[in-house]
Length: 158
Image 1 (cartoon, helix red, strand yellow):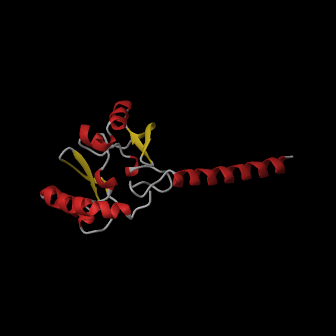
Image 2 (spheres, helix red, strand yellow):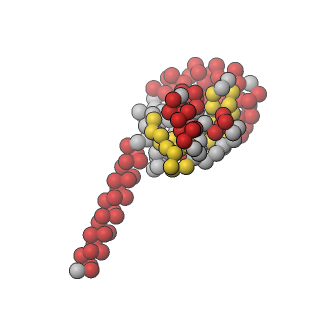
Image 3 (cartoon, helix red, strand yellow):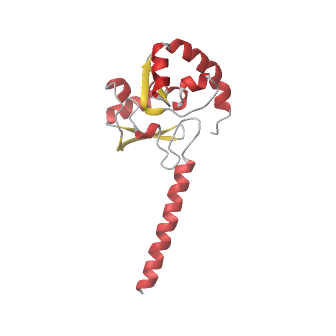
């Protein structure tokens, strides 16, 4: 009886792991930078905390929202509610792709630890050098990124 039970448990864990991986992949999108296994946007960092705390703060599984094919995490219910009401304000611009690289015609995922809030919008960068260059001349980089983003976005999977 025990070997049958062990086989059942093994098969159940295999199919459940397979289902979780499929669910994570199905919940992701390339138009927003997400972890392909967990579906978490911006590495699980709280997008509202960049505005309210002026720092990158890890979100908690207890405070999640889904939107744009991604799972967003927050440090508290107030931040979650603010994001749900205004994702266009609190979500990273250009789906979390580095605006400096977008200006060059390349989609490169931003790192939630390299960020700038400019013009009341959040921007993530793949490298510190890009963040620093953007912070010095945001208008220049935004003009280039905004011009190229529509065509680059069309090339990304939904």
